[in-house]
Amino acid sequence: MKQEIAAEVAEMVKNGKKQPHLAAVLVGHDGGSETYVAYKIKDCEAVGFKSSLIRYEDDVTEVQLLAKIKEMNEDEDLTGFIVQLPLPKHISEQKVIEAIDPKKDVDGFHPVNVGRMVIGLPSFVSATPFGIVELLKRYKIETNGKNCVIIGRSNIVGRPLSVLMSHKAVNATVTVAHSRTENLEEVCSKADILIAAIGVPGFVKANMVKEGAVVIDVGTTRVKSDETKSGFKLKGDVLFEEVAGQCSYITPVPGGVGPMTRVSLLQNTLLAAKKEIYG
Ligand code: GUN
Image (tube, rainbow, N blue to C red; front, top):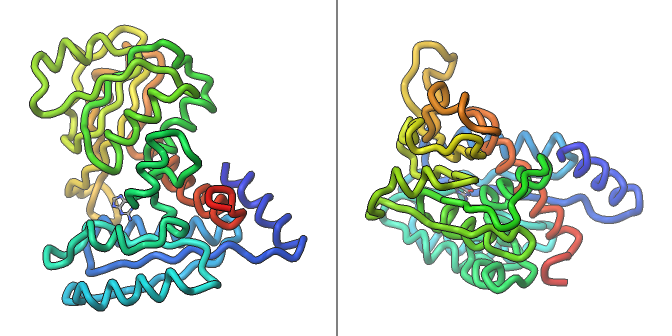
C-alpha cells in the first residue's frame, strides 16, 4: 500500500501538483506518543510527503495549543495535521479535536467526520478502523453476513469500527462487547471475526475463540522488557500462542494492525491532498 501511495505522489508531483504535507503536534514526552509520531514522520518520507513536527512541553496551555491549531487550519501549505493523544490533563482533548478544521482532520476524530462516516458520506475515517477494514479486504476475508464481535467501545477504535463493519460494503452482523457485557466468553466464542481492542495484554484466550475464526488484535500495550533496545515490548490483547492454532487468520503484535494504522494515516492525507472528501 505504501508503494501504491508513493507511486501516486510521484505522479502528482510530476504533473505539477503540490506535494502532500502532513504535520504532527506532539505535547510532552510520553514514550508511546514519541514512538508513534516518529513512525508517522518516517512514513511520510517513505512515500514522498512533506512532514512537519511541532513540539510543545507538558506545560503548554490550552489557549496556546488552540491558537496553533487555528494557524494550521489556515496554513495553505498544510494538507492535513494530527494532534497526538493523549494530551496533559489540563487540556481538553475534545476541545482540541473540535478546533481542527474537518477538512484537515486526517485522524478522522472531529465529530463532523465521525458523523459523516456513520451515515456513509465521504469522510476521513479513524486510522485503526480504516486499516482493519482494508486488511480484511486485501486478504479477501469473507465478511458478508458474518458474525463480528468487537471487544472495546473507544471513540478511536471500537465504536467507529462497529459502524464500518455494519456498512453495506462489509455487511457483517456486529456485536460491541465491553467491560459490562455478560457472558463475554460465550459472546466471543460465537464470532466468525473477533476483534480485540481493550488494551489488556493476553485478555483473549483459546476458550473465547471459535475454531476457524478470524482474529484481529488491536492491543499495543507497552511493557518493560530486557530483550529489546528500547527497553519496551508491545503486547497484544490476544494470547497468541494459545489462540493461533485454532483460528484461520490472526494478526500478530507487533505487526498486523499497527502497520495498517500507519498506512491509513498516509491514505487519509493523500485523500485530503486530492480533495476527495470535501471537494
Ligand atoms: N493516540 C493513539 N492513537 C492515536 C491516533 O491514531 N491519532 C492520534 N492523534 N493520537 C493517537
